[in-house]
Structures are given as structure tokens and as C-alpha cells.
Image 1: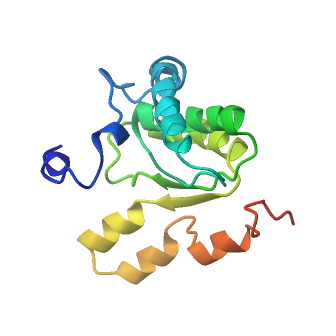
Image 2 (image 1 turned 90 degrees about the horizontal axis):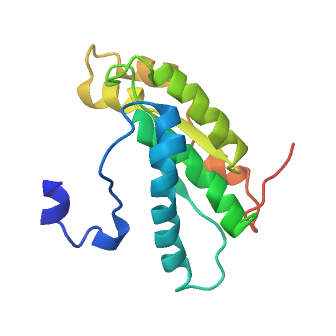
Length: 173
């Protein structure tokens, strides 16, 4: 938080949402308990922002999937955006935590539950593992390029744009 308070011009305080507790690495708690309380605050902030503009085309969401709140609330929000805003474009870039920095043994289970929900409620989902960034910046064994090629699913913005037409609709193959 020190960086945010020192750099108060970077993010407006109304754009930061926090809570009293976390979901303790539990998807169900982040989705069904804490998430249900927090999602209304998120939607209220989104509504306030959207009401100041006309011609909303969609939402571009970046999400780090980790911890119970990141998994649970992160997968609950797209469901509510669909209800509130209909078929607006909802491309989403999801970053998964690297196994080297994961702090919980339940992360693989949370990943599966969260991914299923996210794929149902977003138009285009780009998956990225933080393993690439972890290895790139720490370069633990000097084989940077081999690891980058071997790191899971990687989306480039070029690939992402190929799947959207000018109206933000999905292309079906």
C-alpha cells in the first residue's frame, strides 16, 4: 500500500475496493460468501463509472487468479456483468500464479473451479502463467528462452484481435 499512497495520482481512491477479510484460499468462500458481498460494491463502482459515458462497447478485464478472493470473486463478477450489461464484449486476460510462488496446496482445485466459470462468461479468454515472468526476471538457471517456449498457454494481442470483429463480437470457427 505504501506505493499506492505515495503515488496517489496513479489510482483514484474510489477505484480501489477492499474488504475486512479474505477468503483464505477457498474458492467457495470467495465465490459464495465474501464474493457475494464484494461483487455488489464492485458493480456499484462500475455502474457509477459507466453512467458518466455513452456508447459502452464492453469490458476489458485483467485478472490475477490466486487466493480465494481472486478465484471466487474473479469468477463471480463476469456473471453479474452479463446480467447487468447483456452481451457487451467481455475479453479477459487471466494470469495464473506460478507454482514457484503459489502459497497454497489447494490452488490447483481453485484453478479448475475458477477457469470453468470464467470460460462460460467471457468472450475471449487469454491465459498466461506467471511462471514466464518469474523465470524471466529471476533467470534461475540461465535457460530463459527454453522456459519461455515451454510455458503453458500464451496469447499475444495479435491472436486476441483476430478473434474479434469491429463490433466486438466473437468469430466462430
